Image 1: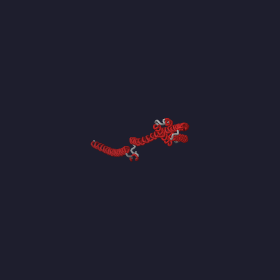
Image 2 (image 1 turned 90 degrees about the horizontal axis):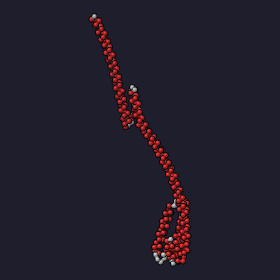
Image 3 (image 1 turned 45 degrees about the horizontal axis):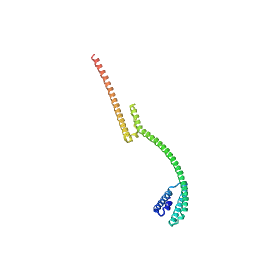
Image 4 (image 1 turned 135 degrees about the horizontal axis):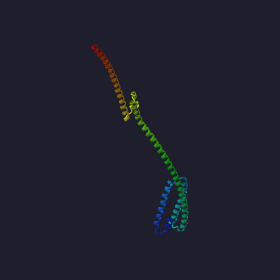
Length: 234
């Protein structure tokens, strides 16, 4: 169209029409430079080769027509324009083939992306489930690790309340740091103190029992002497 306008504007405003041709050529170069790097799939690439060849053929035909026209060869304009239209038909056909191959490639890429999205979503759900299970497992392990010493100390308290003073706190609990270790050591100290107190109390009871037996013997002797004195008085 720019070529046709340029020819028809001969002798009037050809400078403006020539500028339109230069703009069109710049756009074509920009487009082909973009497609050179961005068309990647095999089918579209083969279609692009034909499209680019037809574009180059069209631009050569127009450049040749412009060159002849600039030299005053107006009689060749009709044949040049007809040949340019023919070349443009090839450009249009090859461009359509390239467009459909790109649409087909886009569709396949979309299907691949959807499939990968579903796979990623499934993997994410499975990973989340595994993470939740691991979290539950570690929470249970932590809870068991936290509650086991308390259960052991509770059992020790029950043993002591049942009168089993020989029960010993697990040495591993005594070596622990933190509140469990402090509680275990305090409980063990309390157990030793209680055992000592009970031992002292047993010893005191034995001493009291012996003293009671001595006092009873003394009372028996006093009663005997008292009876003997009464009998003597009588």
